Length: 430
Ligand code: LLP
Image 1: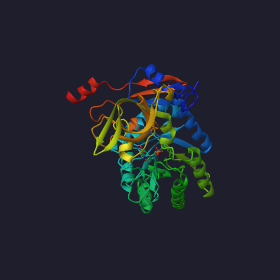
Image 2: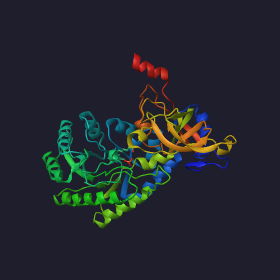
Image 3: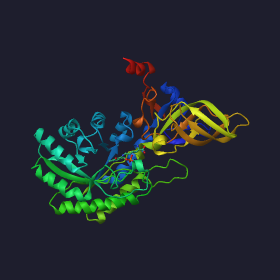
Image 4: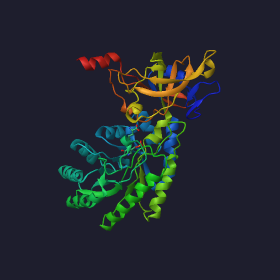
């Protein structure tokens, strides 16, 4: 049975969900690059957040982190809802069994057909991100002859989170959310819908990779003040959505408070504000999946150079920025470790810093420097690749989206094969 997570076994081989990674690759019948996920560990993460919320809230998985059906199904089975940001994600969530009343939909630029799908499905709420959008949602609700369509307002809390600029969303310059000063206009727009819309929630999302609960609570305190103003204007809310953003450590020197601590801190903030009667919604993506997936890659060859008397050492691998764009996009450092037992390294092998880089024709296709044996191992695992790996993958350089292997109870339970190169070439040429 599963012994949970990514561990190095007694024999020195790297194991996921209790099984050696190389054996999982063989059992799945796929080659590298390949993402391998531990569904049991993902289920355990979901269970921990659902337990922390108890009957006082809903955990809506931000499916943008990884929209693979086996993953979404496991998370839904643990009692979670889904946070979507597109009509496509909404359709995946429904196909994976999410209950409409447990789906929320954010996004700054929803198209009419996406709004229509959300309205006609009867999801928990569409979270509007601008006053103009409230008017558009009202118009669509009227066109569909709906009354009391559930709408939430995503508020920009004007809080600077200590995170990478590309994933900070709750500050004044961000395109996300309705500025606090604009909330009264959004309420007027809801009133002006004359019953087409019903306000059910206020939400915020301050940013991703929060390593402490401080910015989360700070943003929620702002939201609480807005909630009071909204209630004072006679609106009755059903829930408060504090957003996602729970961080995970990617580097050895990073620490992050565990996901349930965000729930406890948020719940306490609501209770202390006298809002104990409101349900708490959370929208974690990364925390549920990042640590429970690896991207396996083979070393194609080392490359040593000596330009201007400076010795350099690259390890060129078969996974690239098209499989994991986080290092190129956010300067993220994902740990890279050998899959084979260190004992299998040849005599005289030493650990040296290698610059690991992929095959894509971009200088930013670079996974950074990693201490690895020399001579190099043949198979490597890029860690914490369960979130924002496959879901941000592309076919850049006419490279297929990598295979995915889903593991439970130490065995492969599902495989999504890489698209055949022939099919990809046909896409481009026919
Ligand atoms: N809710 C909203 C409204 C969001 O915009 C996001 C993420 C989440 C929830 C989930 O955030 P999480 O719990 O996963 O941090 N591609 C980036 C992360 C972008 C996040 C965008 N919004 C990365 O790889 O770090």
